[in-house]
Image 1 (cartoon, one colour):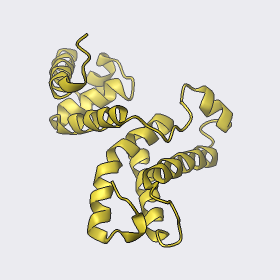
Image 2 (image 1 turned 90 degrees about the horizontal axis):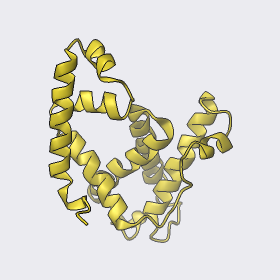
Image 3 (image 1 turned 60 degrees about the vertical axis):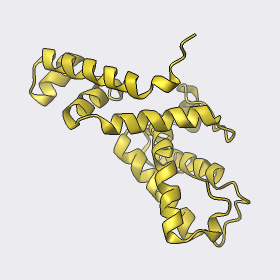
Image 4 (image 1 turned 180 degrees about the vertical axis):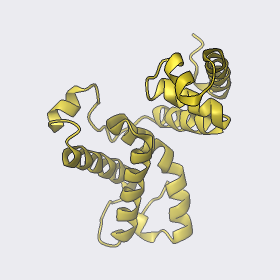
Length: 174
């Protein structure tokens, strides 16, 4: 990762962005439950970091700064849109407080999950996201996509098999 964000050129910053964007998006999604909004929030955090990189002293803790920035932007969005009544409600909703000392394994797993989901074929990915992230039942997914429940089952079965294969390194075999 970047040692000092101030010293990064545009190309290096872009590499840094690509490395952290998926895990930060997943982190924002935990709060917002909206994938597109989570991506927008993370993008905004990176833009702010880039625009203010010469004024901000992160002392080599750019990653922590970004996580805190995403957290604050999520809270601001929730407050402004009154999705939750207060920050306390959000924190009581099973969202852990920000921990800046993320374990490498956790970050790698989050990154691997996001990358694996992105590799799914479009229809399979859509079925998986509607089921696992949006919480829809197979019948609801079938109605929404205009396909049979059996087709939804097949897509989910194949998606889960694909994800198990992609995430094999993270599966505890003990």
